Image (spheres, one colour):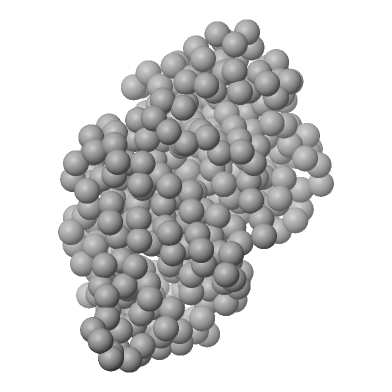
Length: 383
C-alpha cells in the first residue's frame, strides 16, 4: 500500500498554500506552472499567498502541455540557483509532473533524463505541494513524473517513492472556469486510471476500493462537469475521482491503453486525456473477455447495470459501449483521423513498437498483447 502525504480538500483551500509551505520550514519557494495560469492571474495569486507568509518566491511558467525533459531541466536550474527549499506544482498534470521532478533534481545531480525509469532517484527531494487546477491526472497523489525526451520523442516516467507529494490542496473552485473540452479530456484520463487499475493484474482490495469510488463518481459527474462547469458539486466530485484514480494507479498500475496512448503524445503531441479517451473503448473491448467479471462491474459503476441473470461475458461488452457513449457525449475525438495530426497507416508500425516498449503497463494488462495486436487496435481506432 502506497499513499502520498496530507491532502486538503474543499472550496477555497488553495488560499492556505503560503502558510502550509511555511509550516514545512521552507523559506524559498519555486512555483512551477504554465502560461495559462500566468495569463488568468492564478500564478500571481498563489505567489501572493506565499509572499504573504513571509517567504521568497520565484515563478516558472514554461511548462508545455506535453512536458519535456528539457523544460524540466530549465526549471531545475532555477531551483538549484536560488536554493529553493520547496516546490509548488500549480496547474494540470504537466505542471505537477514537472514540479515533482524539479523537487528531486534540487537534491540529485544531472538531467531529468538520468532518472527516467524505476527506482533511479537516490536522494529525497525538497518539500513539494501540489495544487491541481484540472481533475484528471491524479499527479497530486502519485509517484510518477512523465516527460518527453525531445531527442527521440519517447515519453518516459521518473518513478520513485521520492516523487510522492508531501501535500496536496484540492480546491474545486480552481476548476470552475476550465473549458468543456479540457474538463472532458482530463476527466477521461481519470477514468482511464481507474479502469486500468481496476483491471490490472496488480489490482488488490486496496486499489479496488479507490478505483470503484473513482468510476462511479466519474459516471455520475463527468457529463455534468463538462456541460455545467459552475456546478461546484460536480467539480468536487471529479476532483475526488481524479484523486482516487491516482491512488488506485499508484498501487495497481495502468495497462495497455496508456502504453498505446504514449506514442500519440510523444510522436504527434496529442493531449494525453484525448489519447486515452479515443483508445480506451477499443482496449476495453479487447480486454473484456480476459477479465469479464471486472469489466461487467466497471460497466455497472459507469451507469450500465447488467440485466438480471446476464452472464459476465455479455455484461462485460457493455463497458466498451459505455466508454464509447461517454466519448461521444463529451464531444471528444473518437477516431485517430479526428485528431487532425496526420496519423496514417504508415505510422502504425512505429507507434506499435513504441507502445510495446512501455513495458510495465503492458505487463499489467489482463490479456497478452503483441505488436500485431497493437497495430490491430490502432487500425480499429482509425475507422
